[in-house]
Amino acid sequence: MSGQQTTQTSTSTTVADADEHLTAATGPVDVIQGNEEYQPPVYATALDGSGLISMRDSQHVRLFYGATVAGGWDSAPSGQAGDTPLAFYTVSPSVGLQINRARLQTVIQYQRTMTGYSSSSYTNQAVNVASVKLVGTESERLQWGFKMSESSGNDATRFLAPQQTVAVGGVSAVDPGSSLYLQNAGNTTYLDAGADVRYRTSERGALVAQIDSVYSRYSGLQQTNGLTSAIFSYERTVRPALTIDGYGQVSRYYGNISCSSFGIGMGLKWERNQRESLTLSGGPQLNTTACEKQQGVNFSANFSMALTGRSHMYVLASRQPATSYIGPGLWQTSVAAGYQRQIGNRGSLNVDLGRLDSEASALTSSYRGTYVACVYNRQLRSELNASLSYRGYLGEGDGANVQRNVVLLSLSWSPTTGHIFR
Image (cartoon, rainbow, N blue to C red; front, side, top):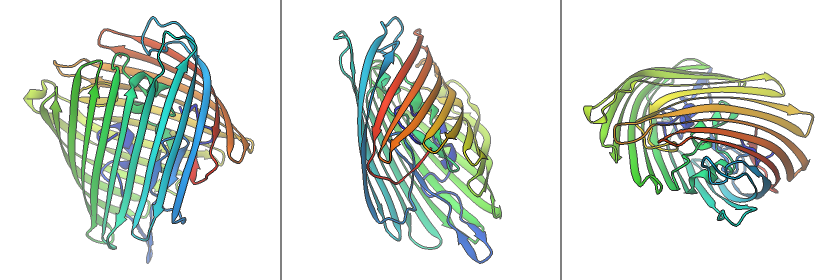
């Protein structure tokens, strides 16, 4: 649903980390092929919505920047039901820095989206997104990673901003959480930080420890919530393309919700030449009595496949403890799918759809949202691209429902390269 972009993001407790489950920053266990060590690809998601950034790029230092200007029609400018449809525009500049060293890879990014409407009845809004991701190698056995992201501004404006993506194998997939919003949330702040350490115990085995913490504040709901999760796992490479693992996780809610959740499970990761990728994990999940509801199970699944040399598809599904993006709930259940096809030498077509439900406690409301998007991208010059897109959204919860449709015509300028585009 990156409709403002041309050629083609949360914590481990949301579907946004479906491809990063248990090893968010460093990737899966290295696969041993004969006497050679295979280094799996590691990606950072581009905040401008253009796709993925390879963190193993050979360039030592790169500054990348660009901007997207878009105009279109919005059926619900304030993000709520009963709005008068209006024309609007957006301006989205972005900048990033990538630094690669022998033992440390770093990507830092910032992106801002500003909007304006054809009626003075609606004030201009803005939303800001920033992120940093580091991947470090201390030795052949020890690796670590760190990530932090921040999003702030009018929550309904996120629907007009470049949509955040996640890596599913080598495919850039739309994150259902960041594609949705709360129609009555007002100005929001999301903070997400995480770190992990992976120690290889043998050529085929590794121990992984990961911690993630997310904080969310909603001015319209007058609520502040947070969730800290710790995950411990053991991974085993049984075949060159197949890794299995067992894990345990503990989550602690704080703020308007105060309780704990515990889970265990098993999983597998299968990947073949970056053309096909499958990740599955799941197990029982139990909440303390203070949560007032039981999650029952946790699971995460994603699949991507190159259908031909010019087309890809992906599927995501998740049920994990979460308290951000679409309400201060106990857990979120989501599913998403997408299809991407290159048309000729300069064009591409992307179709994305998904749904996310947030299950609440007695102190908070339940929320749910469904989105669909279709975008056609056309490269005009090496640094200039145009796109035409449609975004649809149906949100329900807290006694207020909204249906929103947006049509966008965008022009993107990106004089620097480095993304692996969708």
